Length: 254
Image 1 (tube, helix red, strand yellow):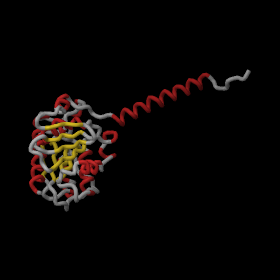
Image 2 (spheres, rainbow, N blue to C red; image 1 turned 60 degrees about the horizontal axis):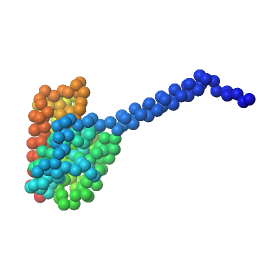
Image 3 (cartoon, rainbow, N blue to C red; image 1 turned 180 degrees about the horizontal axis):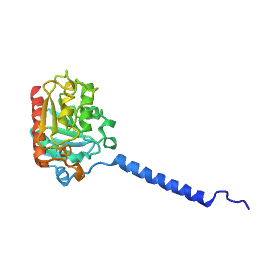
């Protein structure tokens, strides 16, 4: 009778390696697809009302029902954040008459599809003015898109972020606002100042006293990530006002 040359210990080792591989694969997929879940206030903001209609296909879209502007807003989410995590802010912005589109990004990172705005702009031909914005890495990618689309972007909003060194739009004649929190350890006064040469001289810099990086949305964070010393509501009010000021400016420039 033919004997099996594989020792029992080798068989066990093979199965251990298979199990380890499966676990590693599962963890990798889970990490790549994870997005910080929205808080209840953001979920509630997903309900359509008299002022705003909300749909999720082909992108998360907030469509104003009244006083519709010719200006639209494309918003790139921050890294690994569910787009719904920004619904609290986008609902209010849209209620002022602005179409707002928040695309979902591959593995929740705008860096993997920074040109998605091409599809959004083509999808809404009735919008004549486009403002692009983004939070964190989404803000960096929004600036990256802007430098390559001088003729189609009419305004830029950067939330808790700054442009990359290869995204110099200092000679662009468009309104730009950079909004950041004083308690953000990653996007500080110094890191903002170091990159001012990349943005137009008349860029509006808005420092939210007591605000932090994560209160630019409404999504779950760990306690050690919470640096804010003002309420999320207060920070959102300041973000919304600064964003609307720029949108109003663009909509009235045509």
